[in-house]
View 1: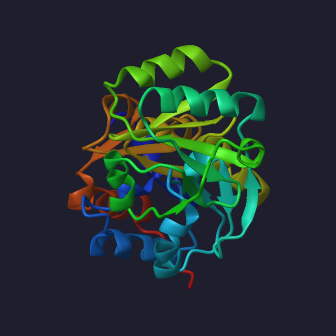
View 2 (view 1 turned 180 degrees about the horizontal axis):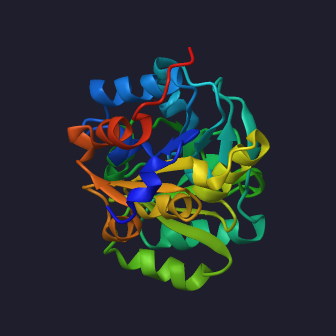
Length: 277
């Protein structure tokens, strides 16, 4: 731990990544993690899920935990209320859309499109899309995603490739400064509006609530969580995180499958906080 003074503060809100952080390797929330978050609710500590996933794939968590605050989905490009209604969305600039889609397809990969309604669409299947299915995502098959409608309403383009794939570097070089290109998992990355980040989405939630940045604790494991680490008072990484996350963390805790999140909440956040409800 880098700064012990940070654990003496009273945190009013927790924002956590989902896959690889809150959930175990079987995409399940451990009982200990669930218990910790429910204890936070009793102490009036807000909980925000901040995920690269669609709202449909985390609704069961929102219901199970009884969450009441806005939630961050699709890497910050869509903010929803707990009932899945869209509060705000950040669309990709339409002038880049068709060019990107054709560039990806010509490289041999099928992009998955997330629209501002929070749904995922594709016009071709690929074995690597199993990684998305495994974490609860569902797709709507359409004849073509190369249409004006998709160009005007897309918030996220998923690409099922590993980090070492040359397409990753090619897209970053081609669209640097124009779009947000971020890795959100070990098997896929995303193309977003250049202002769409989990960190910006989190700021848009806490500022109207009067919550200061230093009153927020965040949990993460992947590069798409770095924007939250940049604005939070307490930055906690699970041990299975990417190196860049581990480097930025104030605290590194047990792996996601060992309930690292829950252990950190009880040790560093709840402490002697009184129960309000």
